Length: 301
Image 1: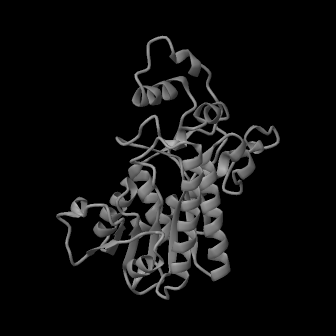
Image 2: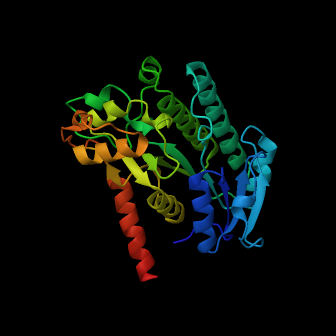
Image 3: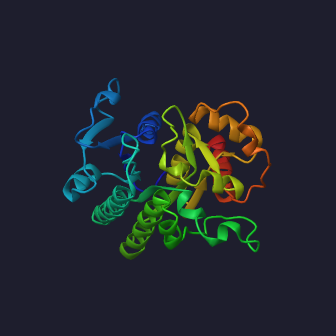
């Protein structure tokens, strides 16, 4: 099922992230024409070998409104992700707060540009599970599991210096407010921890990892699964709202120890801290149902 717009031109911004690169590749294989928006200080070499007729590179700054508009011109859809920390993970608290403010401002600029671009039919906004799980509901006995209805509490995030959760929550709320006010068709993909070769112990998502584990809320996602989720919510006309996205739960001794070994040189004898098996308390049923229906329609086609 395709977007309702007659053209097949889409924009991926920031296309230099691991998710962005994978989305560009997948969309090109699906015969879309792709506007790959990357920062001006990023080399274009990662896209060498692709057909220049189907792929156009734009040097776009999320704080430069006009460069966003240029990248979006003629596109029927946007896949948007903001990931400023992958090259400089060791910011102090003040710098993390500034980065959060930048993420909010970037989200506002991008959604405003989408509202001003007549051809835009749908926006897929990449957010995080961290915008869902942080707050008193995390340990409430009256809540069996968390789903897309829940939002992280910004005051809770500030109190415990959960800067990643704070920035993702505020940026996503900003995007939703502007999308609803300006009539932009938007869906969000709230992803778990992206597991891959670039994952390090300094990843800001991991702040509060022990608490996530103890609460049954520590979830991860593989890159291929995350890409397929983005394609599905874009192409399926029935998609709406938020979609929690993960395909693995860290809630057993083996899972936690395996992740710990990937992130650090875990000495022998320290794995007993993960000894208990924790019930899962977060749901991705909404996305699973959409993916199942979407794959079924693909097989019929």
